[in-house]
Length: 426
Ligand code: UGA
Image (cartoon, rainbow, N blue to C red; front, side, top):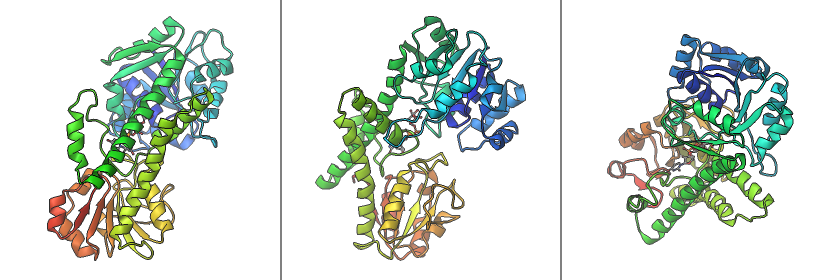
């Protein structure tokens, strides 16, 4: 059992804290938001994340998970402190390190002798050294331990990771951090800090590359009359390729891929390498938003001016309530700019909220969103949409085309109800 402080209770910090408590460590989580801390102390989880409520409740009940306001309060008795604060995109595309530096500055003089500070936030290569410089504590080792958690399955990803990466020049600090994952069966990769930081960016950029690649192949499929779903199956059986992360869609988004791919472009550029491949991956993604918007325009009869579009799905993917850099929102903005009226439904968004563009009618029910619509489009792969009755939708809307941006709906059922079903790459 190790005494841990977790600074920042966003989805990474909260998942990390709750999972380490589940693994038996003594965990104090800190946040600067007093109201959030009060809610967490009552076991209320501010985000939609599968099993997180269960683990937080367990930690609170057993007494080895607590929440406090401010980093200073959390670190005073800790052996290892995790920095899990945001690294938003700065104006020039690079990651903004100011939250990391502020947190490090705040805890610098309060950390117990020979404590270890771990960077879990996604930070530019070289940030471990930046934290060391801010701390000015020769007795304190700084370790990079990047997270590979997907929203929606963050708890499972933490407890059953493909690997744990630990970056530190000091062997004993690396071992201490690696040992925290004793009860987790995973390959532990110990390396230097710069390599650990690069692994995180390279992994996200590679996954984004896979997604842009398959969306580009989907465009080719449309041109040549192939079905991308079958192409993915045929490619995926090749073990060197694998079938994961090859689901075509309306483009990729979320709080990580867009920010991290741009940050890596900048990192590469500063290191003297023009990363044209990654720039292309980002361009293909922006074009995908345009391509899906064009499909909706064509389905609406060639112009979106004055047309009503029903949108199913607002979040950047299913099983989260996160709207950050959501492809759905990017496409909705294009629809609104072209003069369309948008009626949207999402299982986790029951009213207009920050992130939903002004002017979008947020409906309480998926069928309500289709009232008098000219076109229906599916932009997030919520399973619930699969089971909705196309006949009810047909009675609601005069339009007879569904643009299925996630290849989610059963084409035959929708055709049977009189709809033309336009997917991606089929
Ligand atoms: C991503 C990575 O998958 C995590 O490993 C990483 O730790 C995390 O970023 C991070 O850096 O913190 P996440 O942003 O939660 O996780 O979302 P993903 O599941 O990777 O999905 C990203 C986007 O790609 C979504 O818009 C999703 O809909 C899209 N996607 C994903 C597809 O269009 N097709 C797929 O086959 C998979």
